[in-house]
Image (tube, rainbow, N blue to C red):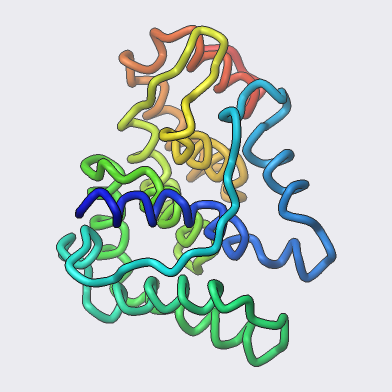
Amino acid sequence: MCDNQRMNWKRVIGLALFFAFCSYFFLGESLQEYVTTQIKSSSSERAPASIKILKEEITNSNNELEKSGLAAEKVRAINQLNEFHASSPAYTEDNILKRQAMLDELVKNPQETVQIFSKLMRTSKDDGLKGFLLNLTMNSKLEDDEKAEIFLARLKAGAAISKEGLVPDEHLSFMIGFSHLSRIENESAKQHALEQLKGERALTGSAGFRQIYKDYFNERL
C-alpha cells in the first residue's frame, strides 16, 4: 500500500470510531464522550496525545486489504461501509438496516474473516486499517470467541509503550484492541484470551503494559 493510502486509513480512524459505535449516537452520545470513556480508559493518561477526526474517502484500488486474501465480497462491504459513513447518512431505519447488511458480510464464512483480520493485525504496517477492522469486528455479529481472537492478535503484535503506559498515535489500534477485549460479554471467551495474553512475556515484561492491563481489567500481572 502506498504512503498516501496508509495516511488515508490513518485519517479515517476517527470515522471508524464514529460508526463502529453509532448506537451511542442514536442515544445522543457525542464522539468526544466515547473517545474519552472507551479509549482513554480509567486514566486520562492512557490515550495518545490526540485523535484527529476527519472525514476522507479512502482510495480503494490496489490496497493492502484487497491483497490480503479476504473474499472480494467482504472487501467490497468494508469499503462500502467507509463510503456510507463518509456521506454522513441520516440515522434512519433504512440506513441502519443498510449498514447492518454490509456488516453481515463479515459473518459469512466467519473463520475466513477471523484468519485474515488476525493476519492483518500481525503483519500490516497500517495502524489506521487495523483500528478500522477492530471496530468493524466489535460491531459485527461474529461470536465473542472469534472477536477475542482478532483483538488478541492485535495485542500480541505489540506496541511502543512507555513506562507510564502511553502509546504513540500510530499505535492507537493497540488501545482500541484493549478497549474492545475488555468489553466482550462472554466471560469464558474473555478469560481464555487473557490467559494467552498473560503468556506473552515480551508484553508482560513492560511496566507500561502492566499498567494498561490493570486499568482495563482491574488486575495486576
